[in-house]
Image (cartoon, helix red, strand yellow):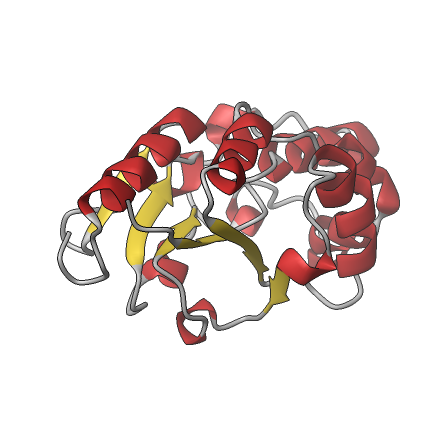
Length: 192
């Protein structure tokens, strides 16, 4: 069994940002957008009545991060990966002005076994070395030298995972299973 270095995105992979963001915007601005309405990456098309600063300003509000909860199964399966001997790093493209609040109100609150030593902040995830990247953004998986696991999300339904050399995970149970298969086979990147 090979011990792997696992890179994990935060938003909509470790935690459910999208449902909290939609709920926050609906409550604050009287919108009526349903989570099922979000079918693409650009949130502006689903909240056309909001100005850019209203829509994205929410990400700078501690009240939003207080609403964000962990994705179902993430706490358990990340802990299991660590207990299995794998290294887990949270790789996030978070804005520098939101990172402290996001880490304290979400990551370290719900994943107390992770510390700043497990966090990498970058806008170019392809530059980070690891055996596996779990991400909901296909742009983060494209071109990276790692096994690619696309976490299923409303905004990535049109992605052809086979064409990009990835697998789609419908849950954290799937993520764990894919990683265990790689580990058991002793697979290194490029031979999956």
